[in-house]
Amino acid sequence: MNSLLGVSLPVYKRPDQLRRCLVSVIEAARPHGVPVYILDDSGDDTNLETVAAARQAYAEIRHIRNPSTLGIDRNILNSVDACECRYVWLLGEDDRLTPDAVGTVLKILASEPAFVFVNYSTVNEEVTSVLREQALPLAADGRQDAAGFLASHGWAAGFIGGCVVNRELWRKAPQDPYIGTYFAHVGVIFHSLHGREVQWVAEPLVLNRCGTTAAFTWQSVTFEVLGGWARLMDGLRPLYGKEVCDQAVQSFERAHGLNSLKFLLYLRAGGAYDRRHFETYIRPARRGMVYTAAAWLVARGNRKLIHMAHRLVSRVRQQRGRRIAGY
Image (cartoon, rainbow, N blue to C red; front, side, top):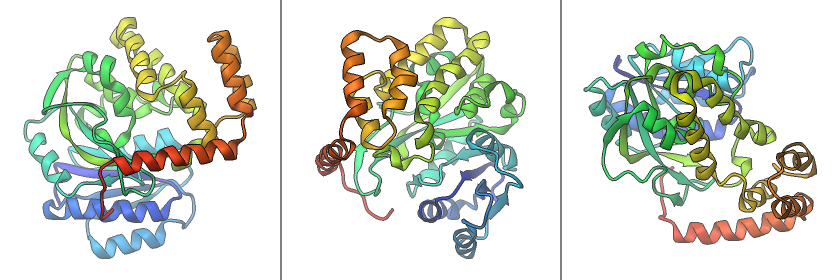
């Protein structure tokens, strides 16, 4: 077993996606003997058949079933804690690794970085087309002080597949202040990184499955999840200061297109925005008469028509994107 790097997957109840993910992980991990940890939060036997098949294909699979359901934050944190390697690469159950991903990261780890951010590509739900080649437009591998990275690019680490964690530093940081934000792993990572540097890999080594909100396990709490980033920054302010954390909130909002009608239409198409969300989150925000009126109309718009329009736009985007196969 490779003791330098392990891959940890916090999983729930998507066995078909997990199966596809594991195929890509095993292909990348096998030449290096890297162990794969599956932290199962399903609370039932949903994933047993998938895990058993993966074990037949690769002996370095460890399946850990949580005795009770932990939820998103705690299971991600548990995924790092359970790994016995010096570094832990987190990965979602519907993500995919590129074939050379593990070998590339192992070379980076030879310099013993405090944290590695791995760039990723955004792909469609079927994982057949690249929608965005790079989450961050990085030309080459490099490093940056943690405060600067948090302010400008910290939002990208909200995607767990971009995070390779130094467990020695991870264990020194508190977890409880960040649980409940939906980004607890980012809180622990940047708490441990205060005064240190982020090492990044420019080449996308992970495929991040995207599309409608139906692709996400947290669709029913989309607004709570998105609001969690600001709560996370409140927790990091004592370390990084108001300016850095305010910039991190602004860059998060820009990166995801929050507070735009385009984003509300996207949510409406996926069934994650309706009248209840408008009354709870949009109206109280008082973002201007025109925006509020338009948001009101979107919340009441015909979801089927908006969904059809979104699918049409998505197909055009997919046709323009680079085609991929084998995932």
